[in-house]
Length: 559
Image 1 (cartoon, rainbow, N blue to C red):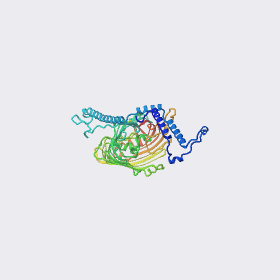
Image 2: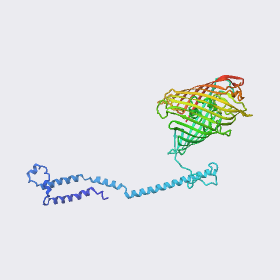
Image 3: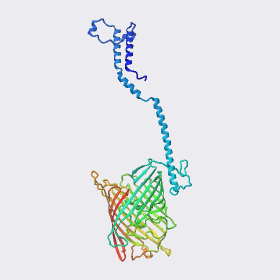
Image 4: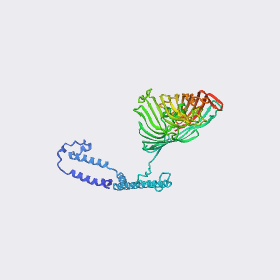
């Protein structure tokens, strides 16, 4: 290459040129005017002083000679020049580099084309496999198989996925547009009663709830939810709904889901109930899950939560047992929510209602102290059972007023519930009984280990329970108390709806419990419930009791 000349050849060529330059400079000629101002040369040595004095021209030539010698000394060593030349020869030629870049671009384009064809082939293979079965995908053999050339049937997407734990086990797309979550709620109970030989109630170990929950997004605004439940010897679809959420302040939901009636049901998640189960009113007159549709929203103006919709309103049923539908509405006002870290930040007040006509058998048929709505008869003490010829017939108008307060480790909420439900005897439906219902409860709980509360849910302990070295902790501990009362009008007996010799129309319960949270997923609960009846009730054939005691031990897993 032109830039890699040999250092030796350069040096040998420069030396003759240097000689000619010296000879040429030594020839007589007139010095330029500016040379008369050249700086004086160094003082001569003693030996030079003895010889003839030098002229300024000779001194100038001597100085230039020294400069040329210094320049030659600074020139690279021939061996270094040779090594540099070899390294330069190893560098790729720019034209060759351009050719390689062009080849890489062509290969990349071919790889993209092959990947696209491969995905299309896989989609076609899957389509053929599914379509052959007909009913599996809804694509029968005569139908056009999915293809990217058409929009219907929809092309099979090929979206990459990521996994993580929390909330639940989640598989999601990198942009969070699509995801599926799996959650689990497992409750394992031991229920033991203070009165022996009760019938049909018995001491037993049981599984009150085993929920398998699938939820996620089909693009961010569209949320789906499906829960399958095994509870009290019953296996069913617990929830199944679609929720449209473009703005959390205004959402639309349709399907089967928790009805927005009573604060403790709509506002408190089941795994986070302080004493494990709901109050007397909800257990016996709550709507529980229901089929319908609602408009609902959260934090409107930072303070208001609401829900309003139309429902079948047959408690805990998969379909309506009567033609009329009911309106259910909920309103919660948190006036100080925007004032962060204030003592009243988590203060709430509001109410809910259900209104509509009903025409079906009573659900539940027997009112109990603890089992919600359609629980097994062996797990809750009955205090009133409607006669077999009784039907729910006519208006049902129930309402609830609530307040809730959370601060530090304190939970405090309560409700007053009231209203009317019309009943009739099956052969006298034109003669209805307007039965008044009154109820209340006060619920309190306090975390002893320093955790702070904003609302109910599972607790993340400051020091999770762990016995491993370096991780030792005792978990979180919470004490809980609830007092609840329920009263029905005397018409329940005077109109022949129930037998006053066996049952009572008044009951009060006191719950005292303690929860041990191992971590945010595992909870151990012990609860003692004492029930007092207005008049003695039958607890077995021929036996009556004025009180009842339940000792409940629960192990709960939630993620």
